[in-house]
Image 1 (cartoon, helix red, strand yellow):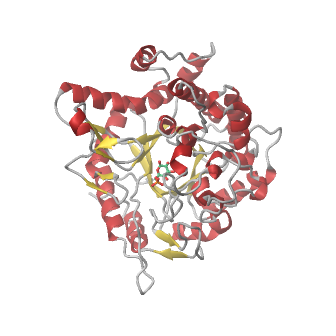
Image 2 (cartoon, rainbow, N blue to C red):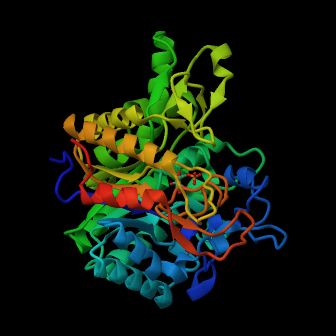
Image 3 (cartoon, rainbow, N blue to C red):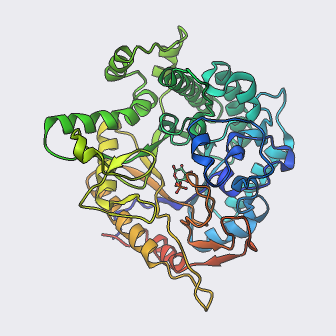
Length: 474
Ligand code: BGP
């Protein structure tokens, strides 16, 4: 018998800016991610070094067409249904609903697009799981207000949230506010549309922006519970345990602090208050967060229903300067872990770390967990028969799903698993198409060439079997 609950939400996860394309169609406004080119210029912009808020005609912007899910969604959803998906995580592009982020009235074309998308999913009995902000801020709000630096965005986001709950209350039962909310600290332009000027106190700006997102998230939780009481609304953390390199207490403390940098957000969203360690951090760094009188009560009374998280890799840390120079991993920064293999992009492969992370989160919050991203970014090759034999992906996912089953047996409540990029989409960190996660191959290369034809990979049939057997585990 499977250890996974009967109604476990197996599925996949995509994001508007990495899948949809049609970046100015249907009345959509320009968003922050539409300004991220491929190539050398991408990373500095992601960090907040932005020269211009207008796309440069000499650059290639992968989000502008992406895989054109906007026009292919029916075909793609039929393929997901063929795999037996119970859920699909998508994101709504704020600028499709409010092209400027704060327009008087919403854009009906945008609203209708998501109505059609949710109807198509429901037709196939696939539960939509919807992220309200997945790395996109309407550019107008960056120009006019400095994005999430400004308290004004809280009100604009609340209006956006209320518009979504009112319109989709009969179609959407799972919501999430900000994707990987802790990304704001690592890639501030990606996480919060933050652009820095010379002399800015970056930490101060980042934590003030974080406060605004946390308040906006609490207001969204409040509105969701009022407008759509049957729905559940969660937060979303880029998770991954940090290991101390040795048993030196300095290393242990360092690892704890690194984890707390991320837990900080969820401590506020789930426990409803700023933790003591964060207050100390602000004092020690001379930061002061401006809050309104009502903020504390608002955060306390409007905590999330579940904890959504992504897990790709674990991290390791050391206070020894010599060890510290061996860097590895993704945007979080990590030292090499000699016990683990890495992906082609240097992300550690650590299935046991998935079980550890799930246990940590459940111990800390005691709320249902939803694994809303997990997967392996890899280079796929199409063989002479036109097939893609992605056994490495199957291996990665099988081991992670096994560890998720172990976590469930440890007593962790997990309600679903949406693997990242069930169809190949644009990579968030690199903008490349060659970093693929999908069960479905999309004919498109890094320069934007290709027929966009969809082809089932070997992993497609494997995942179909996993879902049919409710996890093939236990
Ligand atoms: C997370 C994001 C996703 C996604 C994924 C994989 O950080 O929420 O948007 O893309 O990571 O990362 P990448 O695409 O860089 O491989």
